[in-house]
Length: 377
Image 1 (cartoon, rainbow, N blue to C red):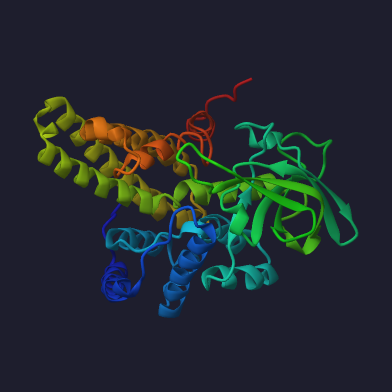
Image 2: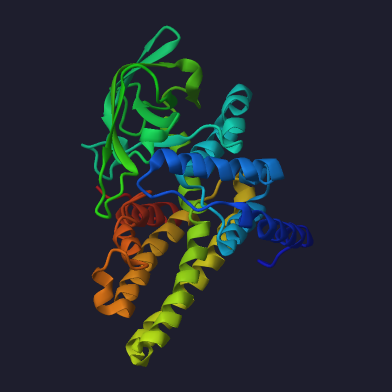
């Protein structure tokens, strides 16, 4: 498979690179990480800039290859990340584009692309652990609405979100992976309560969400009733398949910076450390090529990344943790200073083998769907 840029892709890359060089100097400094309303405004302001320049539609209306080039070049240029709107741009939006009705695409995709609305993800639950299909949040049909009761946890940016991609159980008597429905929940609906959670790094990008008899219009259902598990697999394919592209580029940049720091502080003399840096360089190069392969193969599956995303997610999670463990070795005693670069990143890296599906779940997916091994009992 030829993974080099086509003439169209090379033209897009050059044009985007030139535009970023002109646009970024006018972008102001990012707000304090704890100021989520400020971060929302900052992130959506950049999204509006992209929209006005004609680059916002790359998330859905361009080929997967152009989408990856966009994320790669944006990261290399130091452009603002999607930030508070990552669920809308990278998860919910692509899912609605793939599975939604014409009316749903018209209602939600435009505001996401224009930087007008923020989405969060209401999948995980306190009593379900990593077993997403064990969710208990109930939704009963009442006329033109679903009435939802339950709770969610680890809901990213819930306190500043307008909408939530919500999984609910609409048939409690159906087998575990059936009777689940995917809804778009308005976060300002009566009965929605958000309680921020503080992470190990001191941030509050996650929250608990409590739902008490919340009415959600049936028109907000994406996919058929009880078919939410299949729709969720589409969402997770985007989350694992393409949402981490920019982060791979960022990790390769950090790796170069680590090597430079090791040369400056004398740690470069440690041959074991040099071998670790070399192995990580090979690891991230391989992950980048795997990402290119996954993206190139996506059009054959209707634009939805396949189970190869689980291979990527599994290996990337471990490589990211190893990268920041190596950063701690480079920093030495300074690795305990929260104000030093990479220290908070090391703390956040601990979550990557859990977020977007645990490593154990990814191994099951690879074993069952790619290798054809029997399901565990």
